[in-house]
Length: 281
Image 1 (spheres, helix red, strand yellow):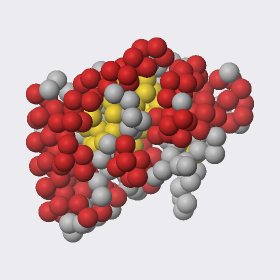
Image 2: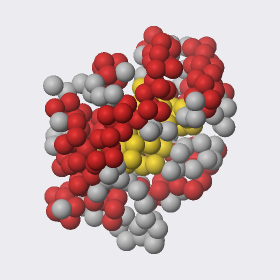
Image 3: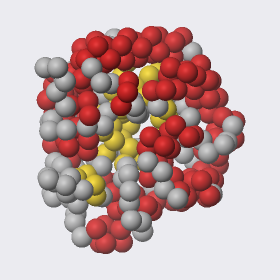
């Protein structure tokens, strides 16, 4: 059974062949390339639920060096840390929902610290918490407070967007309000490059306006409007060379491939990895 991101977070608190199957290769570019490439484990959540260690091993075999969690599937922090060690993977970040920030933030921080994770990323806000601009102001205040608590525990908070943050509300753009109202020294952003594009915004504009605020990004592609069907990285319309060329301005440190509903989860992440590994910008 596959779960939506809201349900999931709430409930859980050869590469060349892949490229050939994708049918698309990167255009010739510059000499710079990505270093470590990561994957958001939500993409392979169904397999994770059945075989936690085996899934991590398969992810590592593709070539991924980093993963981002969206739930620990009943494992203790110590067990998660040991599984990562055995797979040879690092996990810089994990996702939680906004309800966790309100109800069990210390618990989320303790789990992340025990698993050796640095960033706790707020990845979903329920509709009832974000109806008005005043709601978003309260969200910004809570993120500032939560980030202060995280910093005192030696951790970092980041905020992950979908597309709803870019829909104008009472004459303002909620995402812009969050950036302007949160402490840049404490609150980082994990920009989902698919959702910001679906929201009708240009990531490069945000990188230029708020340089250094985006240490984490989700790398996922779109087949374009009107449906904006999600697809493997490199097989859609997003200009990855232009975006990745601005990684220093954005402050990007971690890149996570993701596909919310892939037909073949491992085929999907293998194809996306192959494209990004070959890409020069």
